[in-house]
Amino acid sequence: MIVILMGPPGAGKGTQAQKLAAHYGLRHLSTGDLLRAAVVEGSELGIKAKEYMSSGQLVPDEVITGVVLDYIHHHRYQGLLLDGFPRTVFQAEGLSKAVSADNVKAISIDLKDEEVVKRLSARRVCRICSWIYSDSLPGSTGTCECGGELYQRDDDKPETIKHRLEVYHAQTKPVIDFFKKFSSVVEVDGLGKPDEVFARIQATLD
Ligand code: AP5
Image 1 (cartoon, rainbow, N blue to C red):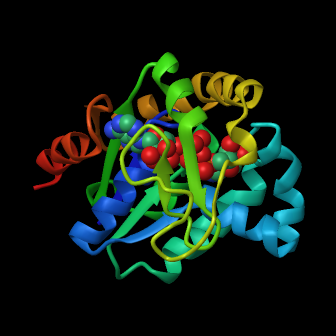
Image 2 (cartoon, rainbow, N blue to C red):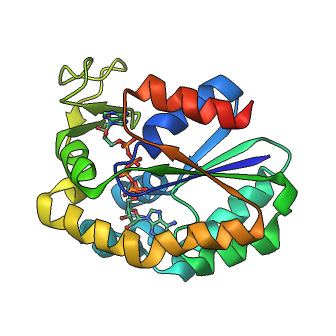
């Protein structure tokens, strides 16, 4: 089974992915985390991705698609949770050739742009374990439970958030229509407390 979490930046994909992975024992692949780690490491992938990410553009399909399809192939006997992939119709087509539609459960978390801007401006992330916090939710103290420092992502600046939303509407939203034809998509309201959103997602999976 492959669970795919879609939705605009800041919709809560990462937050829900952490809960879903723990609850269902799924292996969580966040392409954003993978790329950010590659940038810090200075690997060939990171060098290619860096400029695109900091300006809020998508990394080119040919840079990311092969990496993710290899990962899926390598972990094909485990339950997988994809967070941040596919993000273009090209990537979705690549995935659809690699997996059976019967094994895919696509979930799109809906959130209005105004709420996205509020959430991303308040987001803090752990530098060590990538756990996600928010200045506007209880639990953000400046230090992660693992001891790591919390920081603001480079792409969570107002101008970059605006551009990421434009990119989402132009390039990623069409992926939802692709999945409506390939398998199915459940659309879930992303407003409310994280546990309330989690309960909505759970209801579609149980
Ligand atoms: P990525 O890291 O995937 O960013 P994104 O999709 O823009 O999503 P975000 O991580 O910003 O938000 P989220 O939906 O996970 O929300 P979160 O749970 O953190 O990608 C970054 C970049 O990498 C891309 O721009 C691109 O350059 C590149 N990239 C990645 N994948 C790619 C691909 N496949 N192809 C090409 N390029 C790719 O929540 C946000 C905040 O809200 C947090 O502070 C959280 O605590 C808070 N929050 C969450 N839920 C709630 C709630 N219910 N109520 C109140 N606050 C909440």
